[in-house]
Amino acid sequence: MPHNSSIIGLLFCGVWLFQWQIFYCKPADSPIPEFLAWEGDEVSIITLYAFYIPMFFAVMVKCRDLSPFKRFIMPALALLCCGFMCYAAYSAYRPDGKIFGYLATFAVVMAIGVVFDVLKTRREKKAGLTDDEYEEIFDEEE
Image (cartoon, rainbow, N blue to C red):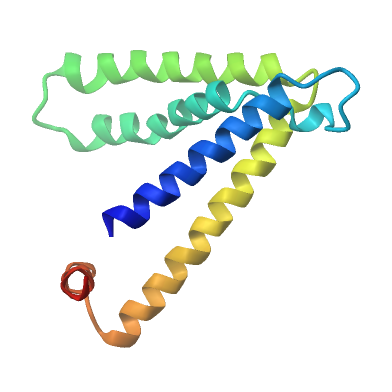
């Protein structure tokens, strides 16, 4: 299985390089619309900041054994920082509409991931296995 993920990772790196070369460094007379010319390295990192927000809320709610400073103050400051980064990215890309091109691409990638997840879940339910049992059997086959 590791070799499969390595090949997929290499493929994704090639796609990212292609996207960066063609969309970000494009000449002015390129047929590629500005809508798709977002920076793949910068905007994807900002997406991770958006993913951190629910995790900080979870720390505030679930980590009752932490001191008030670690449970409330630090996650609240982190929430402010994440919110600022998301707002800064949105306001920087909004005038050209590039943020919507990124969000459309992100939605397509996530939809493909959901399809694979649903297929895996159906396979596991059909076999009557838990996640751990399924992975053990899959690893033994290799």
